[in-house]
Every structure is written in C-alpha cells, then in structure tokens.
Image 1: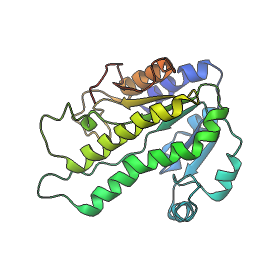
Image 2 (image 1 turned 60 degrees about the vertical axis):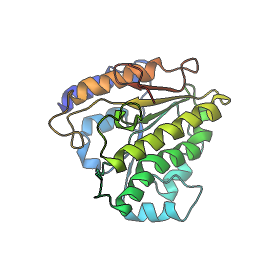
Image 3 (image 1 turned 120 degrees about the vertical axis):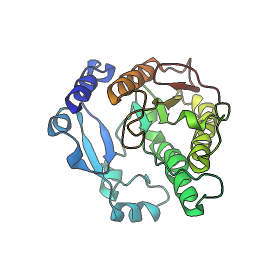
Image 4 (image 1 turned 90 degrees about the vertical axis):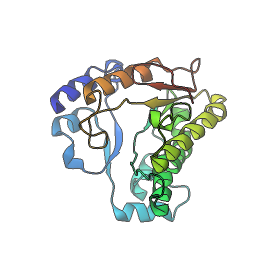
Length: 231
C-alpha cells in the first residue's frame, strides 16, 4: 500500500506542476520510505521533547516541533500550500471525561493548527498558491451530531472548524484561501479497521479538493469527495 500511496503522490497536481519539495514534521522519520524522502522531501523535522521545550519558551516560534535552526532556515521560504494534518483522538464519553485529555486535545487539534498558520503567514504570503487546509472530522459538525458521546474529540474538532471559519475572513484580504477538510472514515491507526475507505481513496480525493481550492470558493467545510458538510 505504501508503494500505491507513493504513486498517488507522484501523480498529484503538485508534482505535475513541477514542485519537488515538501516540508513536513513527522513522529518517526524511519516510517517514511527512503525513495519518497529522496524524491520530494526538502526537510523532515523529527518531533522530540527538546524541540517542544524550545517552542514552548519562544512565543513566536512555530510550535510544531521545529528546532531553532530549522525555524531560522525557513524564514524566507515561500509556502504555497499549508496543511494542518496532526490530530489526536481522545473519546471522553459522558461521565468519563478526563480534563487533562480534553486540554491536550484542544492544544493539539485546535490551538496547534492556529499557531502553525499564524507563524507561517509570512511564508504563505510569499507563496504562489496561498492555500491553508486543516484536516478536520465530520465529528466536528454540530449539525451531524446525532449520536452524542466523544465529547473531547468532537468539541476539539468543532473548535478547529470555528477557528478556520474565522481565518477565512481574516486571511481573505491577504488573498489566502482556506479549506476545512474531512478525510472520510479511513482505515488507519486512528480510524481503525472498520473505516469505510482506504488511505489511497482518501488521499487521492483530498489532493483533488486542494487542487480545486481558490479564493473564489474559500471557506468551505467539505469531505475528500468534495461534498459540502453542514457546520
């Protein structure tokens, strides 16, 4: 499946447009195929405790696990498309909600994406595409909540959606388009084996939706297939 995903990335509009670099932060550099790293990745920031501690004491640093040297090196690097993809799932059903887990989820799922966007704004303004995408969940939809439960995860994603909605208005004057994107229920470590679609279908669909994003349709909350989701 990794080789199939590799082909999806190689055939994506980004590569077709001649892009050859990708800046990413991952938990485990060794989890990425060497061939993929060599082909399209410019820098890989490996997250570790020391990096988090540096970011925590530097308010204007990118609080996403980047070192001081990496942050400095990115100062004049244009970014065409910024994708907030990191997220955690903490269920928290009624009468079993853990306060620390709730706070942890808001930091990761809501505050983190905001701070990444805020700190990368100068880089985005230097880019050509000027697109900001936050990967959310349909579980963040208030309208779609027909079953209750999952207080922690739902509320953190609802807050992410609200944050992105505000950013749509605040970034439009910079000609930056935003999208709040649901990847579908995917068979991954987080989604579990019961997911409705696999990674290939999800990633292929999301690439297409990001390609379709423009300042004319900015601010949408949609899924990987382009279907609008009610807030």
